[in-house]
Each structure stands twice: as structure tokens, then as C-alpha cells.
Length: 570
Picture: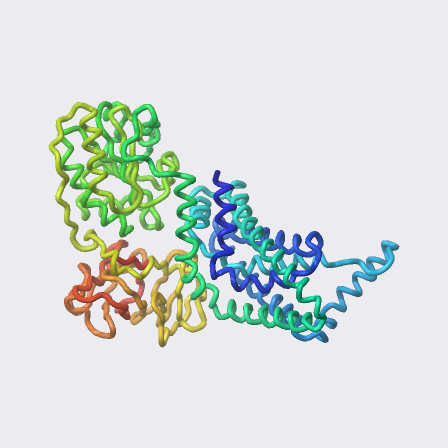
């Protein structure tokens, strides 16, 4: 089913605007034999994309850097190809070495005429197209890459990525079939061939220019989100449908063994299956710098308190996203600050996560008194339904439960989000996963460099100023006075931050539209915008109390050594 899902998602990319820069390269094969021209080109594209995506998913930052160089070479190659379509004399000159080689090979082989090098040249064009292709990373592709990052290298990951790209190649083959028919019509009046060839050449050059300027990622990817992501999500729902509100015991699967086989529990003896026999267990997957986890935490705490005497056991499974979240001392400090009193499993190796086939932070799994999973919830929301599940399972176990739901209100970053006014997505600042970076010259990965702020950033673009080192997971300020700017649209803005190991606390100041935030300050700064980084965690920096609209956020670090990981919004 996973391969069918990946293939269908690949086909869907043809409906997305971010496939547009690739189409001119593909249409240049229109009118040529499928087996010797079109098929090698599409196979080259699929193999190049699957290979690069596999390396990027499992090999780390060096693969991303290699891909950037590969894209530059490929961009030059396809631009030259487009110019050759525009200028026949250039095409003749470029083809001369290949023609000479073909004649020599034919002579050696004793064949009559020239050797046909079309399959090799088509495959080369396909490889270049695959390197340039920046697909809309919808839910399906995101799930494949996330699974690769969490599960490590595997043949299954490579095959899934190839299946995804093969789906896109199939859709492009259909476009080529239509292009062949149009070309056949155009060939009737012979005078139409030359304008068609020049038009394709112009389209290829224009597409190369669009990719070089980042138009394919900065604009077309945003346009693609409403067109394909919703359809891909429906495919995911069909492939892995949500459990009904409460499945029967006969339908449920045992769940206690992977949970109670966990090796490390925070500051307590491990819970055993025997210790919770006959009790209802709520398993909450979370990590302490995740804003979605923090906003659901007040509900989980309230349920643990309210239903403890009725037989509910809550277990938090702390599965880290960032490296600093793997440190038990950091988790211990966060658990105390957040008021988490129930048992917590340290799941640094993702063993419990994989045992539950979990897919997201946060996630809640509800286990009945017989140790079987009866319900689960991914993400925020559905809290009233979750509490009703708890009540039903407790009633099945023989406990008397009063009707009604717990009253919950979170403070600071744990407060409920304003989804109606949320227009900004989570933004990572490390070069491995970032998007929307707008400083002139782009990111110089893993090396100290001077950056300048973007002069007129668009919504959801961010930039640096001062001396920074942008690593794979975070950006670190090398000198006092370093700034991060971000144009956002949301009620709340949070930034996951820390400091270099062993360095003193880092002071900072926040401004909104160039002024002190005043009453719009978050819980981790004052009205003048001042705050201090003491721990590696999520800091709430903005909570607007008036009309929500696009704002220019800036944070200046008054001391060196600040690490910035990710913006989140609410």
C-alpha cells in the first residue's frame, strides 16, 4: 500500500505549479521516439531524484552540499540546451563532438551510418532535470523522508522515493503524449516547426533563469500547497484511516510490551506491565520544545490528576527532535518547569516511537485494562473526544466516572493557538531543513560568515545580519549584535533557542515593526522586548493583543553564542 500511495502522490505533482519549471525540459523530447529518447530521459530524471533524495534523507549535510553543486552544474547544462534550441549554429557546434564520437564508434563496429547517441543524451538531460526538480513536498513525500531520517538507511526508502518519482515520470509521459499529438498537428504546415522549436528553447532558458533565482521554491511551492497537499492528505487517510472513537477489544492490538520494555525512565524505576495490570494507560508522545506538544500538555496533566484515583496511568514518551533534547538533564529541567508529575520514558533511540508506528508530535494512545490499544489521536485538538475515550475505558474497567470534561487553560506558550489568524509555517534555521531565507548571497553552510538583512522581505521570509555560522540544525551568532529578522503573520511567535555549551547566559532584545513590543510581548520577554537565554528550549517572544496582521519581527543578541533552531507560530 505504501508503494501505491507514493506512486499516486508522484502522479499528483503534475497538478502542482511547482512542476512548471520542469515541463519545458520534458517537452523538448516531444516528437522523438519513446524508447530511445523519452524513456531514457524520464528514467534518468527518476533515478537522479531518488538518488539525491535518498542521500539527503540518510547521509546528512554533506549530501545536501553535493546536491547544491549538482544543481548548479545541471542548471548550466539545461540552460545551454535551451540556447541550442534558440540558435541552430550553437546546436551544431555543441553536437560536433558527439557526432564525431558516434561516427568513430560506428566505424569501429563496422556499421553503416552514424551511431545513434540519442538514448545517452536523453538520459543525461533526464539526470539534469532530476537534479533541478524541486517537487512540492506534500504530506506523502514528507512522510517518506521523515521515515528515512528516523529509521536510517534502507532499500525500502530508496524504492519508495523512486516510486514517487516514477509516478511523476508517468504523469510527464502523459504530457509528452499530448505534446506529440500537438506536434503532429503543427508539422502539417512546415513553417510552424521553427517557431515551435524556438518557443521551447525560450521556455527552457526562462525556466533555468526561474530556478537560478529561486522562483521555483519561493513562489511556486507556496502556490502548490492548496492544490496538491489536500489531495495527498486524503490518500494518506485512505492508506492509514483513523481509528474509530473506540474500537472493540477484539479489534485492538496488544500495546503494553513495547512501552514497558523501554530501557530508560526519568528519575524513577521502570513501570512494568504487571504494575498497570487492570488499569487504563494513556501514552503521550511529546518533546519539550515542540509548540504543539506544549499546547496539549495542560490537558494531559489535567487528565492525569482528575482520573488518577479512578485507575488512569499517564506515561509521557519523550522522543527528541533536536540534539539538545536527548540530554536527560535538559529533559529533567523541562519536566519540572512544565509541572509534569507522571512517569516519563526517555526514548532517544525512537524504539518506543517505532514500536507504536507513531507518525507525529504530539500523539496520544489509549490502552485499555487488558493492555490493548483502543484509540489514538495525532496532533492538537479533539480534547473532549479524548477525555470521553478515557471515561469509556475506565467504565469498562469497572470504575465509576463522573460525566463532564476537565476545565483547562494554558499559560504562556501552553495557551490555545489562534488558528484563524495563522499564516506562517514552522521555519527551521539550520541549513538542513530551512526555507524562506532572504539574506543576499544565501547561506554559507557550516562556516562563519557575515550576513546582511533582507531589505524588503516578503511574508514568511527570514534573514540574518552580523557574523553567523549556519549549521545543519541551528544558526549560531559569533559576535554580539547579531540579528534575526522574520516577516510573519500570526498572533504568537516562538523561537527555539539555546547557547553554546559552557557559555554564559545570552541577553537579547525583540522589536516588532521596529519598536518595543509593549503589550504584545510574549511570556519570555518584558514590554521593552528584553529577555535572556538560560536554557535550550522554546521561548515565547510575541503574543499580540490587537488585530493580527503581517509584522516585521527582529531579535538582536546582545552577547555572542546564541543558537537559534526554529520559529513556530500560534
